[in-house]
Length: 441
Image 1 (cartoon, rainbow, N blue to C red):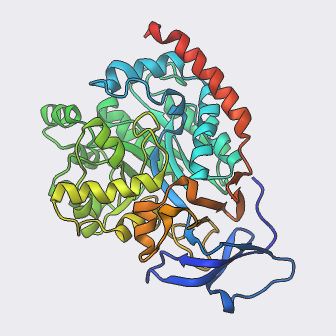
Image 2 (image 1 turned 90 degrees about the horizontal axis):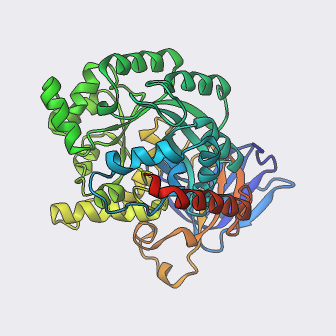
Image 3 (image 1 turned 90 degrees about the vertical axis):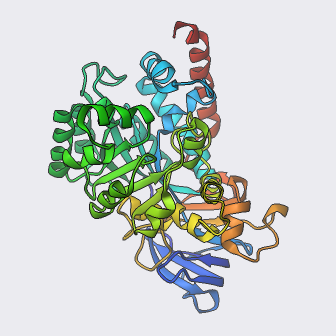
């Protein structure tokens, strides 16, 4: 990882701080050095530093980098396979991964997704998959901030031939990436229905011992709810609570099938919630009660899920869907306004990952993760409400620049850290291999 050492001043735009006061600074500036924000305020008052790099936002919006709280970026190679198949997880996805997922595929497919994510202004992601060393390597090379989890299941996995073998692989990941400035190792028990009680308790204890986050699918599936009710008389959330997994370490993905008691348990345990509205809609799983969670102060962020689930890594699209699905569900256009949806994509995501002290808003002392969004395209003008234009109008093609930890990853729309042509060639080769052997499934 190469950090930007030269002082940088971004000026000539409107700063959407997402700080506690939600300040919007017209004709504002953001300054940073050595990866740390040193100034946020009026452009006219911004300090000048000899030798600094000055970047003009061109009248655009200067925003915090977007935060993706749940994904599986290496599934990009499988995008558009069996999209509308019933019971796809067990009938198709698990066999597909067993047949095709390799260390090489995970690396190149991760870079393929990171190309898309950087273009879309994403600075931080939380990923759970197999061969996490390859995911971590790709994220480090691309320069993004990432929580990287080793997925643990009760059956042979692509990177662990024995059930629960992912636990040993996590220990290697934790050793190799301890103290890394961008990569945070994590444990990722797949779901309550793919691990037994003893192993879930073991993972909870290991997370405490290693002082790492835990990522898991929770209360996502109808059959999950039915199975736990039949076996234990518990909801999925109550099941994790009894086994010691509800804690500030947990980032729980989906949480669709939750009741008021479950929400209270998640709140009291200070868990993070990853809301994946597009993947949930596409799979017909239902809608998580996110407005109720937000109203009760839960830590909620947005996730794309994997590119085989939601098909896009575009968090602007996800924020728009989050705003719209809850309006439709409650038949009330005042529910989940644009500002609230954008909060989920920025400071809310940081809170869900328990990283709000470092990222999620543009404030002095926080890491320099920020993007410049152009307003030049016809669909981005006029701007009466910056939050509305970001949530209902913006897309990846509007992102002009992206910095992560002060490093310039996207410069005037051009990627600086991902070898895009090479990645496309390698992914095309992998896709051809998958296509040739799909009949084996």
